[in-house]
Image (spheres, rainbow, N blue to C red):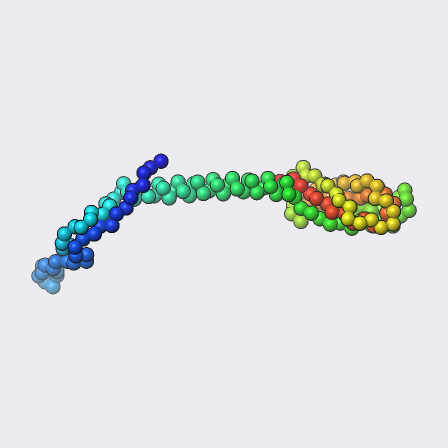
Length: 163
């Protein structure tokens, strides 16, 4: 790691004072005449400016790497948290028949079909739920059905993974 330059202001007795010399033909030359130097400032040279450039580059690279790491953590966390979709399944047939299969659209499309779906029953009307069956998993959705005799089942589906 490089050391800090430790910039110092150049302090003089008469800042901004110049001596004027007439060169003829309407030309004059101004020469700085600052008087006594009270405090020597840090030289403005390539070494000091290159140190500053390198520090700025290192800071930008570290920020980019941190941003990349945060994005990766966010993607992993997003896969753990997932999304919650409430679905109402209806069945108009008599048990043991059931026509409750419904297509569910994912809010955010997945990158692969390696995602899990967990269900939580919110309400049941007119019978038993039975089991949940998932089929036709795609990147943007899946199908869900229940096997029981209920006429209506409201379910929360938690979809995780597929990142």
